[in-house]
Amino acid sequence: MLSRLFAFREGNVMRRLSVFNNMSLDGFIADSKGSMDWAHKAPDDAEWNAFTASNASSGGVLVYGRTTYDMMAGFWPTEAAMQMMPDVARGMNGAQKIVFSRTMKKADWQNSALYHDAVADMRRLKQEPGGDMVILGSASIVAQLSEVRLIDAYMIAVAPIVLGDGKSMFAGLSQPMGLALTDSRRFANGTLVQSYEVRG
Image 1: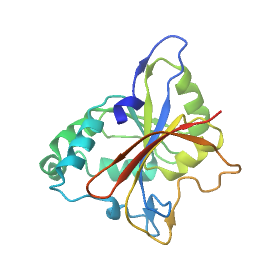
Image 2: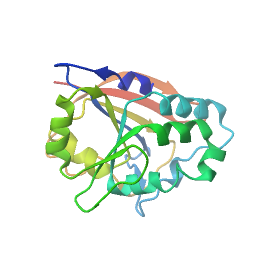
Image 3: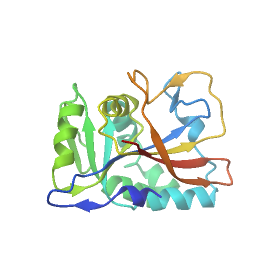
């Protein structure tokens, strides 16, 4: 499904920016402590593993905020990641990556580029030739770019869990944002992956 979010664009065709995130039934992408452990699936869940491996090999540019970038960079290059999910690890490590941070001085994870102004830099990046981009995690970046309507599509993996409190990727949105459901897929583990395009 993520492959639908990615394409290589040249010339005057604007690059698309999408979001892929796990979300609890009550709308949080991390719990009140910032943990996403609740979103992890059973290691022998073949259907979900095939889906994530396919997503990881879809190409395109991965986009992060600092917190999510640090978490990803601390895991995917490790031997443990290669043993647990080798296809996903290869895809994550090999992909081109963008991280937005006002405080980072450098981004050392393979194929990473560091930018400091999420809105201004993303507005420019969308105008440049290159692959489409997808944000993973990174609630504050999603919120900032949603507010100014720079995100074109959202793919949300709704997990069958209620957290009660946590971090929303839409916190602080100043006005409603209409979405159109374009696809839906149910997994045996109870996760429902729903794809939306921004309307208007």
